[in-house]
Amino acid sequence: MSYPVKVTFLGTGTSQGVPVIGSNHPVCLSENPKDKRLRSSILVTIDDVNIVVDTGPDFRQQMLRTGVTHLEAVLFTHEHKDHTAGLDDIRPFNFRQKRDMDVFAEPRVQDALKREFQYIFADDKYPGVPKVKLHDIQNEPFQVWGKEVIPIRVLHYKLPVFGFRFGNFTYITDANKITKAEKEKIRGSKVLVLNALRKEPHISHFTLQEAIDLVQELEVEKAYFTHISHILGFHDEVSKELPKNCFLAYDGLEILVD
Image 1: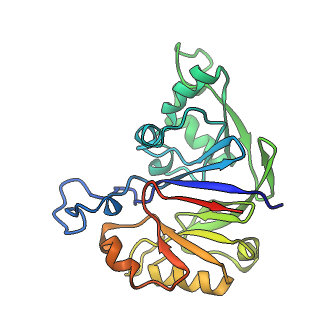
Image 2: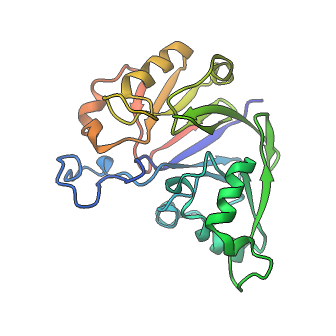
């Protein structure tokens, strides 16, 4: 099912973000705003429905910077803290919208959320804690506020992670292996967002070249790379090295996919 999608890149950095605390690496010292990266996350807007994929440690800052006034749902790719640590900051949306937040995650990720945010799920809740409504997802299409979302199973070293396809837009972060069957779910996307950590091999992330190769294999019209380390290099310099249909994403970038 195809439908128009607006995507806002809330963060495009690694688990440490860019700049890294205490680092004197030239990229960390760059004054170019495109070299400053919060933890990876996107805001997907379909009609008037706002969906965030992953609430990392910078979630509050990202929401304030984007000026979001309503949020209908949160989807989680996996349980690592750079993708979940900001869950507590959904509270203003609870208060404003007077309802529980719809949260979509597979059972393993839900278990991690219950451990990390025990107070949210306690039987005797402290007043004012976030309110969530959990929805189980498996490796099959599901509905979020009336829109079909197709999960794509990828591996982050040995950890199963979900990417998501919304219409003609596919988002995959924290991956270094995708099976042939799962690649077929991506094929036909007009825009693919893919993690491209650095140029050197990594145990759990695609390198820049591996990401480019996958884009070419799947014949995607346009690709944006995210989850970028300072080690990859300066945004402007690396951008000049990319094929004409590939781009480095940056915080605050907005794209429209029909």
